[in-house]
Image (cartoon, rainbow, N blue to C red):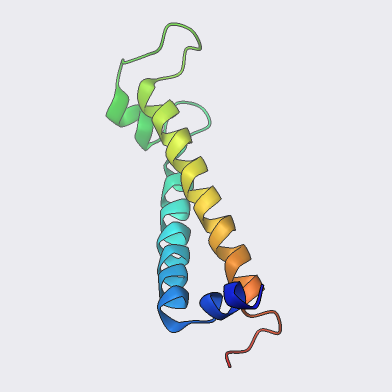
Amino acid sequence: MDAILNVMHSAPFMYIVLVLWAISAIGLVIFVLMHSGKGTGVSEVIAGSIYGTDTGSSIVERNLDRMTVIFAVVFMVSLLLLMISFPTGSVR
């Protein structure tokens, strides 16, 4: 367990996690803002009339959903790693 904590407190690991966190936060904001509620968002403009046959939603909208979930998962995992690395909120 001490070996894992030593790796988590190393500078290269922390830089990687911080970069992943920042990229995923920015990406998550962008992808959430691209969603639309009534078919008037950016995804509808890009997709036009490309609709799936089973759900009625466009292919672009489904891919946008997938990318949003991926960014959210990366954001949460990196945030949890940062919380474990800095439990008191301070850098050593």
